[in-house]
Length: 275
Image: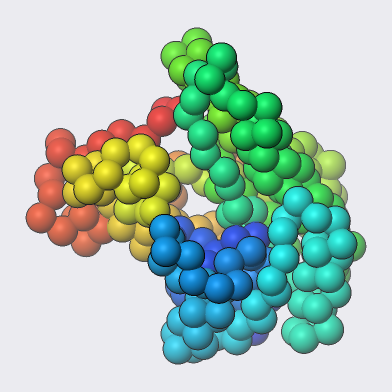
């Protein structure tokens, strides 16, 4: 097996911007095929990019793109995305569960519809998209499921800070680790990946801390480079792990991470939650 994603097909939830798009663009540099199941069909003044501009970036980077406008909460949209991906590229090698909703409200302030949205996108979406792709992943030579979710940390600090969101992110991780155990004999790897520091995304800027926090965050490319290392690893040898971005890169020999936060010292970077 060569260390490349050339010719391999990735089905990703979300990916119109931020970390998902960075992962897709990194894979595209190898010549990968990337199908995006995302909602942003027309520009949103609050957020950069659409599924179509993302597809253009993927093609410009050297990959093939298939934008599928849809909602990971909708089973029919998931089925359509899987069918379209297989029809366009002949199969599915990788699923990246990138779509996620964040709401850090405390329990009494978290509206039921916001709670349901997080559970539906984060947990159910991860389960259903992976489930729909598994029959095709079983046929892949090096099948991976990668979920952008944290290690499960039962420290009361995280359980009590924002219970609804913690449940949703840990739910993504539980699904992924469960799939790893269930489908290991089929050669399907399933792992989670999470960063030690905040990442420069719209969620960080709009929800967590604005420009001040963005200035203390690393670029999405650090997540993309770590994801790449995971996805080129032989799937039968590397599954069921709760991975940390910086540790994955260190294992690959990347020790100097300054390229991901130009002009910002290590001590100035803001730690992400759950670690």
